[in-house]
Image (cartoon, rainbow, N blue to C red; front, side, top):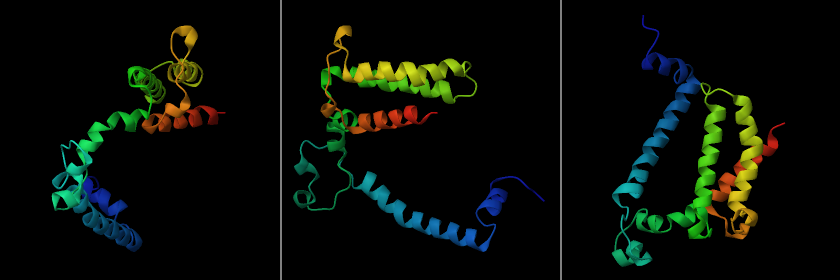
Length: 168
């Protein structure tokens, strides 16, 4: 009898008891109820190009509409950076790259020198990241007040600060 493969895994993990079987079937039912609507809203009835909000208005179009991707595309920078000045957005972009380097260095088991990675991520990166995002006039980086920060940038900054502060 075969004891490996996807069917064996499903039997052992998804259908190993009455409770697991009922839970698996309920989740599958829920997914079959949700996914078609998501596909319809995200792709089939989506508005891919829009010049204004009227192009995505169901009353103007006379039909139901899905996601207004034209709006998302036009405001992508705002979703990522908030009101961070456009000519300075290279700074948060560099911040994202430096954070990714630190995370990969820390989390990839095959990359050596985790001691240096910890120094970089928990000491050097927060200082450099703050100087990049907030500014350092002595280094030629004009100050950007935090009320201009927003979107994904703020989420990443808050998450990073939480991680750095929580390390014993």
